[in-house]
Every structure is written in C-alpha cells, then in structure tokens.
Amino acid sequence: MSELQNMVATSLAINDSPSVVRYPRGVGVGLDVINQKLGGKYDVMPERVAILSLETRLLESVKAAEALEANTIPVTVADARFMKPLDRDLIRKLVNDHEIIITVEEGSIGGFGDHVLYFAVLKGMLDDGKVKFRPMVLPDRYIDHGSQGEQYEEAGLSASHIEATAMRLVGRSATVLTSARALDLNQMQK
Image (cartoon, rainbow, N blue to C red):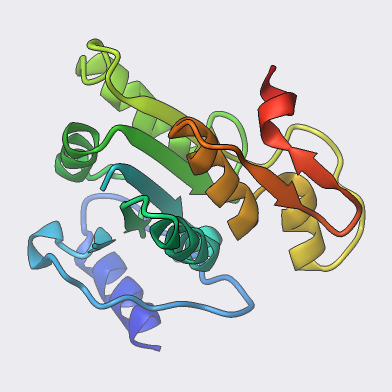
C-alpha cells in the first residue's frame, strides 16, 4: 500500500506535466529504497548483470536475479517506477558498472527498453562495445488465451526466460522449461 501512496504523492508533486499511475492487478512486490538520491524514480538492489524492470515484471526479475546469484552471477535489479522522465543518472551508472543490461517490460517494441537504449546510444555509452543490451518485451504476435502466468510464459517474460537471457549473454548454456516443451535458447539464437 505504501507503494501506491508514494506513486500518488509523486504524481501530485509533478506540477509541470500530466501524470498517470498504473497500478496492476495481481501480486505486487515492494523493495526498500536503498539509494535515497534516486528521488523515488527507482529502487536499486544489490553486478555483472543489471536487470531494469518496468511495472509488472519486477517480481519475475527478482526471481531471475536470485537464480542467477545462485549460479554465481552477480545481478543488480532496478525497479523503474516511471517510464518518463528517464532517470538518466541511473542509466549511466548501470551502463558504466555492468557488462549486461536487460530491460524487462510488459510493453511492446518501441517502449521503455527502446527509450533506455536510445538514450544510451545518443550519449555514446555503448560505443566501446563493452556492454551488451537486451530489451525483453511482449512479442509482436497474438498470444493465446490463458492465465496471466501462461501468457507471460508464452511471451518469454517469465523469471526462467529472464534468467536464460542473462545466462546466454554471460556465455552459459540456457534452457527454459515451459509447460509445453523445453526451449534451448542457444539454439533459437543461431
């Protein structure tokens, strides 16, 4: 509930532009604010891989990070509470401090991940080729009827898919188990 209160208070404090609060249904997750300098825009948790999650995919991002940490892959999870304005300082820090940036959103191509990538490219943050960037979004195709969990699984936005994406980017084998079949993401990328 405090998360909703913070969102409403922040939107009321913004006087120079419109605000929208999207509070999704289902299970929510709250994180303690670790870095107060972020001004309520993002929560950052304890770094080779950074997962920048927008809205409903935060819990799955945290689950993926826990699985990656169990495989000795250090991960930072950042909760992007707002798509706009982008927290440019945080994006700079994530890009400067990590080898891999994964954005995760229940959006489409051209959404939050593309805005983050566009900013990083314009500022020359990816020019040295040291950072791998992967946006994870809803696919541009019809997704069959099912529960939210089944649809996220089919869309490739579950914790296991986020984990597999990171594993592949660090050069480890990645297999995602789905209810219908096992997908070897390394084979899919070839």
